[in-house]
Picture (cartoon, helix red, strand yellow):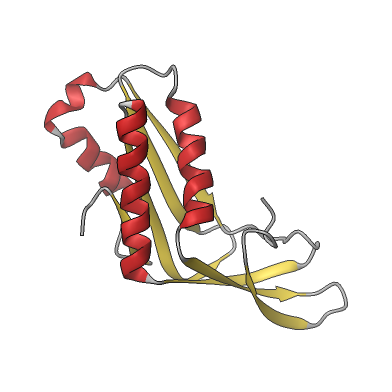
Length: 152
């Protein structure tokens, strides 16, 4: 699997190592900026319920392929480097879920590419989230959420 994008079990992928590896690439001397999106587990959902934890699963092979395709497509169109790494497993509030990184010679279109990468992985990658919440009435429940039901 490419190190440019993919899904990883929680604890097997490091944000710091990702940045260090980018800086070791032969063409890094052409980079003038790094933009980074870190998606984390929110403590309250769209309905105002307290989130206790989140479980994240994926159709690994397809998710890896989709994430790599998004990165290749954006790199080709924008002439920037793009990486998307989504973590899988059980997560508490505040823990990291996803890293999207864009490197560029200049900052001009870097942020729009970062936003495109985030929006595309959310819509296209077969990554599934199960939210465990405490409802306003005090009931504990779990529900699989989709992009349409999640707080965007």
